[in-house]
Image (cartoon, rainbow, N blue to C red; front, side, top):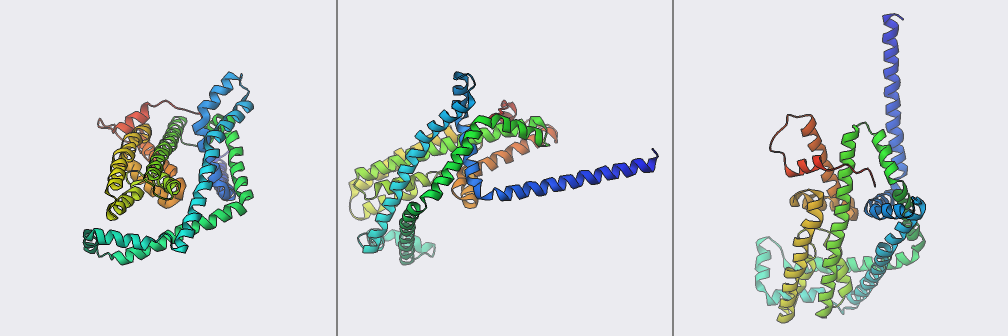
Length: 377
C-alpha cells in the first residue's frame, strides 16, 4: 500500500471516529432529555442505593448471595424508617397549613397587628430598619402577604395532594423500583461506568469514591441535624403553648438544611414577639433553648456529620448548600455539596498529575489521595 493510500485510510478512520463520537454525544444528550421528567426519582434512587448499600451487602452475605431477597428486604427497611414517617409528617404539615390559612382569612391570626406590637414595644427596631431605608409598614405588608400566600399554597396543595394521589404514588413507586436495582446492581453499574468513561480507571475510582462519601455524609448528616433541630423546635413551641407547633417544627426542619442560620429564622422572631407582648419568661426560655440547644445541635453535629466526612471546609459547605438551593431547589442541599466535592477532587487530580508537586497541599487533597476506592453504590 502506497503512502497516499495510507494517508487516505487514516483520514477515513479519523472521520469515522469523529462522526461516531459526535453521534454518541447527540444520542446520549437525547436519552438524557427523554429521562428529564424522572431525574428526581433517578437521583434519589441513587442516593438510597448509596446510603443503604451497607445493609444490602450484609443481608446478601447472610442469605448466601440471594441478591433479590436482600435488595427487597433492604428496600422494606428504607420504606419503614424513611418513607412512611415522611408521608405522615407531610400530611400533618399540609393540614396545619390549611388550618393557618383559614385563620388568616378569618382574621383570627393577624400578623400585621403582631408586628405593630413589636414596633410599639421596641422602637429601636424601627430606627434600626430606617438606617437601611426599610419601612416597617412595608415590611409588615410584605410579611402578611407572604404568610397568606404560603398558607394558601399549603391549603391548595393539600387538596391537590388528595386529588393527585395516583400521580404522587406513581412517582414514589418509580423511585423505589429504581432503588431496588440500584441496590442490587449498583456495583456492576459503577464498573460499567469505569469502563465507559475515558478518564483513567484510577481517577474514576477516586471520583466515584468522593461522590459516594459526600452523598452519604450530606444526606445522613444534614437530615439528622435538620430532624433533630426541627423536633426540638416543635417540642419547645408546644411546651410554650405556641399554636401550630407541628407546622413550625416542620418549617424549622426544612430551614435547618441551610447551615448556620436555619431554624433561627423561625424561633428568633417568635422570641422577639414574646418579649414584645410582655411574656418575658417564655421569651427567655425560647431564646435560651434556641441558642443553647437548637443552635448547639447545628454547631456540634453538622461539622462532625457533614464537614468531617465530606472533607470540605465549613465555608464551602455553606456556600455550596445555598447555591444548590438557589439552582436545584430542595434537591440542592445534596447536589450543591456534591458539585463542590467533585470540583475539589478534579483540581486535586490536576495538581497531582499535571502540575509540579508542592509540599503545602491542603488537607482535603491529601485525604482524597489516600482514601481507598469504593466501587459500590
